[in-house]
Amino acid sequence: MPTKKILKKTTIHLEKIITDPFIIRGIIAGIAVALVSGLVGCFVVWRRLSYYGESIAHSSLLGAGIGILLGIGINFGVVFVCLIFGILFLWLQQSKSLSSDTLLGVIAHFALAIGIIVISFNKIKIDLHAFLFGDILTVSSADILGMYIGVIIAITLILSNWSSLVLVTLDEDLAKSEGINPLYVNVLLTTIMTIVVALSLQIIGLLLITAMLIIPAATARRLVNSPEAMVIVSTVIGIFSVIFGIYLSVEMDLPSGPSIVVVGSILFFLSHMFGIFLKKE
Amino acid sequence: MNSLISATDVNVSKSGKTILKDVSIQINKNDFITIIGPNGAGKSMLLKCIMGFYQPNSGIIKIKPNLKLGYMPQNLDIIKTIPIKVQKFITLKKKFDKISLQKVILETQIENILDKQLTILSGGEMQRVLLARSLLNNPDVLILDEPAQNLDVSGQMHFYKLLQKIYSKRELSILMVSHDLHLVMVSTKQVICLSNHICCCGQPQQIANDPEFLTMFGKDMAEVMAVYQHANKENSEKNNNSLGENHY
View (tube, chains in turn red, orange):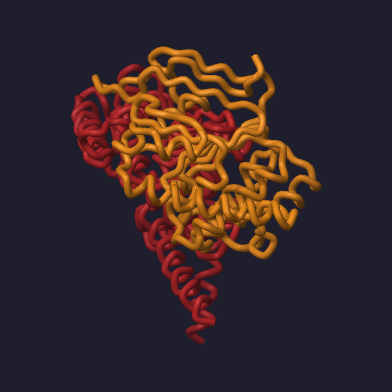
């Protein structure tokens, strides 16, 4: 019977997947990414920061190059450089004579260009393809430990400032009148976005990090009616996309980042249609 | 120092342009002050300085210790992207007790919309929700920045009536920036006419006859005000005769 054969084949594959240490590590790391990107992604969607996130992600290649050159490790290099660029972007956004998307566009691509030049030095051996699109096979146990430390820091920072963050999102003047400093909140969000970028680089890849921030949150938006529910639903959607995306990437030998993003995008279109359907009801 | 808030000789200039020049203003207990003035007159800047959002180039702003301020913005920056219910928004990051919450809900007539999403409120509902939030911690001074800007005429009337009612029932002072001169004239006790400096200030009746006011707003506006005051006087006389309350 052909169906039995397929079933048997699938079971063997599944067995292979859940016993393969590389894939297990990839999935555990991917869940770390989903845990923070679901949470931070909601703020990116609410505050319309997707291009800002993209710009931070673009400067991560330079961070990786500098991390290797200085011997401080890729993750530290990425956090360090992204944080500097993140604060530079924040400062540029205050400018009135050019719109912030123009300025972000200039600086983000400057960072990307200089990053590619730095990693093209002979001394640095780096798999550019893995950096751009993510490669779960590169994840080590030490990476996972580092990632979950990042996850705990990011989640603690957000939850302990939760209501201030939401209030600044709703109205900066209102927040100011109640003693919240919007600059502090913006620096906080930038720091957390930097951590997310550093975490996601290995799994999702530089080019698709913003997708991981936006898609789960945007998918959740239509299904919820409170900020907290949006965070929870978006995290669940993120985790599902990661697990199913990695499964697909192993099964069909695809790069992991794009597979995860495709799964997330399909969920987005489904929730969009579901939302339209609900409205008609 | 008896006044709740006092600003003395406040000067603000930005990129060579004078925005506020030697502006002094005092807010005492039970004051109802309305700031009027043309666009770019520095009205919002004055509020920003008073609330400490902006550091003036010179001048002293004194706020009585432990004074509770309530601030009502014109509108919210971003509302479409975030799902949040009215009740949640009003109480977000606020210290309050159940009794004050219930009181505020009744005062601002929002009991029917507490479970609505903020994104689908009408203009009038939104203003009442913002007002409710600013009243929740029982402020001593309520600061409003063009609160009825986005409403149609009947919405504006309704809003100012509500504000008048709250003012008469609560022990609070109001400082408001408003363009809706003819509508606020009956409620407000003092008008400050601002055009980078204070042109004139006083009771609405005095203002209407002030030559500086006439040059700035023209005779038409003064006449409009006169008509409203006249009507108001008649009303209050009637009310006095019948010993009724002074309704708008």
